[in-house]
Image (cartoon, rainbow, N blue to C red; front, side, top):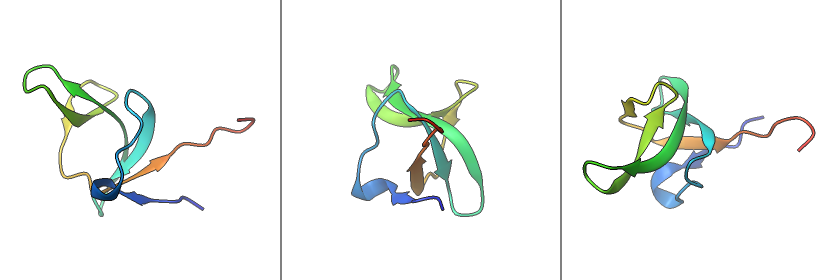
Length: 64
């Protein structure tokens, strides 16, 4: 079972791949600094910003 965490209630570890969701979609993203605005945002694996993230989940790989 995936343990979803509300994004605004807890900040995720930065520069680590997470599952992210906006409610109707799920993807992979990293929470990292936007060098243009100097604020943290979600970015996809392609380096593009992800908007409307409401929840994230920590990825637990087997053996960790």
